Length: 72
Image 1 (cartoon, helix red, strand yellow):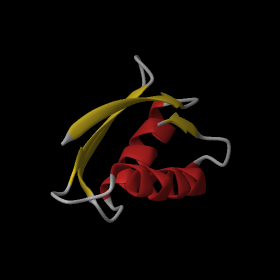
Image 2 (cartoon, one colour):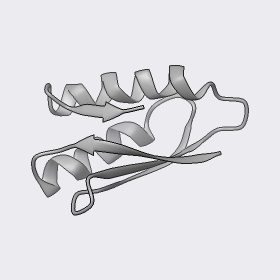
Image 3 (cartoon, helix red, strand yellow):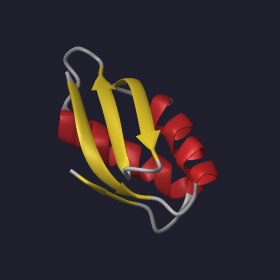
Image 4 (cartoon, helix red, strand yellow):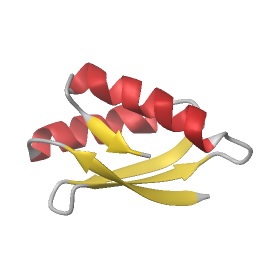
C-alpha cells in the first residue's frame, strides 16, 4: 500500500534527512519527501498497520526536526 501525507518541513536538507529516517522505520518499504509540495509518500510493508507505522515515522522524523508535523 502507498499513501501520501502532508508534511511540514523547513528546508530541502531536512526533507532529505526525514526521508532517510522514514525509510529506516519498521513497516516502511520506501518513503519519499518532496520539499516543494510538502508531501511525504510512504510505501508500507505488506501487513503493516498504517497508523502505528506512521506514528513511528513521525517519532523518527522528530529526531531530525523536533517540530515536524505529518497529517495522517
